[in-house]
Amino acid sequence: MFVPRTAVWEITMACNMRCKHCGSSCSKPLDNELTTAEALSLCDQLADLGLKRITLSGGEPTTRGDWLNIAERLIQNGITTSIITNGWSMSQEMVSNIKNVGLKSVAISLDGVKETHDSIRKVGSFEKSMNLISMLVEAGITVSAITTINKQNLDELDALFNILAQKGVYSWQLQFALPMGNFKNHIDKMIAPEDIKSIIDFAYSKIEKEPMIVLADCLGYYSKNSIQITERFLQDKWSWTGCGAGKSVIGILCDGSIVGCTSIRDRKLVAGNIRNQSLRSIWGNPDSFRWNREFSNKQLKGFCKECQYSEICKGGCSNSRYCLTGSFESENKYCSYNASYYSLKTLLRSFNKESQFTNLLERADGNSDFNKLISDEYRRFTARDSHVSE
Ligand SMILES: C[S@@+](CC[C@H](N)C(=O)[O-])C[C@H]1O[C@@H](n2cnc3c(N)ncnc32)[C@H](O)[C@@H]1O
Ligand code: SF4
Ligand code: SF4
Image (cartoon, rainbow, N blue to C red):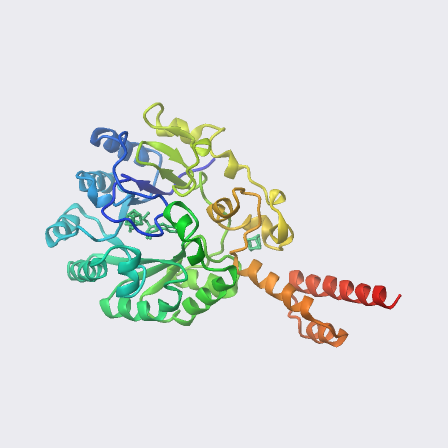
């Protein structure tokens, strides 16, 4: 029995920016976006299903004239509601309204220091985001920031941390830009799997400082440091137990289509539409979200298939795998553990003396995946040598 606990709802595809990395290439509202009445009914249906937390996103959610009514209805229904905004059209009046409807937290996207942020998003937008953070902090609203990392801002994390710390931001979510929408045209800016470790190491170096760093689902899963970063944020024991899309997480598109995750929006993966069916019947349908509800680690390929954590991890973020390769079954090259495995393999393949292997085996720390790799590569090395001498 699956119960949706958290949701992301893209309430509109309209946007007042044209970001270079925008995964959904937002610009104008779609013709068939939910009406206010349909959206409010959905707020009630979400509460009825037991939803605890929701994030309003888009598009730019604040471009929808009734977004505060939607937020208010969700809050009245006991659902903890937050919003992700680019901050462009926020005013002091809007901040007062946010407070009045009872919205407790706002997340603002920040994609670099001034020059970088403005070049990715819109000239003047960095300044607006900074002002919005100040207004929200002043009003006692919890502020989070979200940075979508690409090669352009990868080296700016420390500078961004200092800016956010100085502004009194509560938490800072790090994620990396995936090749979706507009970002497909800037693929040269996509970070490499090896960069994941440096992002996690950076986050770990700030583990005792504010703002608290949050790793999005695309970053992690079984590195000691990433687990500790998440545990620090949650103030509780934690481990990644697989993608929650369609199991504990629900995604809602602006036309009422129901998906497991708003980033995984292929028409063939849409479970239904609230215009034709109740949300409860879509969620309860055994055919809904089978791609994830029935996903087994045995379907995974590459190192994810053999990895000691695969039964519980199931390859990390489904969207990362799907959007990078078009298949849920592919291995997750952007997993920190997977990346360490392949760097070790590259190192082993560069060895040309037997002693290099034995030294490494003597120092191996008991990690079964890595020990096996060293033994396999050692066997391969000795077999190659015996072949050469024949
Ligand atoms: C789609 S936006 C919607 C909310 C709002 N318009 C904004 O930009 O903050 C939500 C978040 O997704 C991030 N995002 C956009 N395109 C992405 C991509 N290709 N990969 C990963 N994250 C992306 C944005 O930077 C933003 O932080
Ligand atoms: S990332 Fe957000 S602000 Fe940028 S174009 Fe997409 S929806 Fe608009
Ligand atoms: S290698 Fe794959 S299965 Fe193993 S921890 Fe990483 S994502 Fe999970």
